[in-house]
Length: 272
Image 1 (cartoon, rainbow, N blue to C red):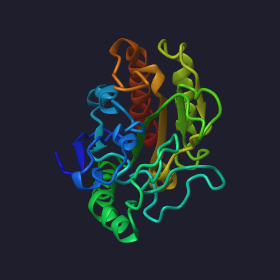
Image 2 (cartoon, rainbow, N blue to C red):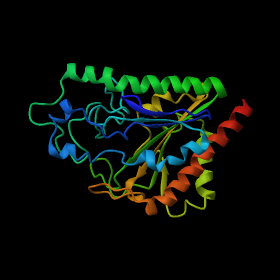
Image 3 (tube, rainbow, N blue to C red):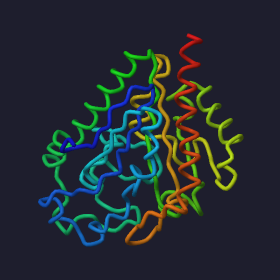
Image 4 (cartoon, rainbow, N blue to C red):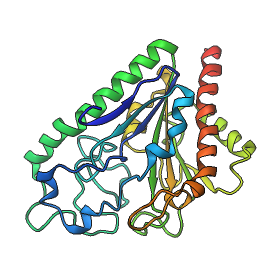
């Protein structure tokens, strides 16, 4: 295990990134945080466990070690807003999704601290992700990057009502070939495991920095983000327990979708 991320090397065209799965907070940062922040309500809980089938597709998997309050790996290092005009959290968030303060009074990170966190925590993850995309692309001539996320089913700050269960983001089909999004839609239509779940493409979540930055379909690097509603696989309140019975159908559908990535990549490469 690298200090900044957990890594599993694979050799299929599929790379899975889990930038918000981390739960580690360094002591010196934790000491500045509020009790509300230390409950870590905004973690993408249990994503590595939910995606344990990734090895069946020989996928490369990289997941964050550090919690998103330390630094958000799915934000630009310049902290450019992903959704101009809409509420969002930044590179080094100062409040939770429910707008509770993350830091004690006067203890928010300053510009110097943020730059240090970029160097220590943000850059190593992205260096590894970038190098793996290049490696896989060199092997296959194509790479599919799957950015795996989850979020509470109700977050009034960001969306009204209950979030759909499966939220696909392809930057309005700018981060991948349109036929890959079509393949996902066909899989959902045909999958025996999809009937109980709602889904949307490019709804509230269109893909974050990772999807938009690394997705270059013209160069045959295709990126998609999946934001899952946590209600379909876990308890949404403390202690945020994983529910294997509840999660079973979601896992089966995720497996179908990952298989779609690998199959599509093979077919798409042959068309080039």
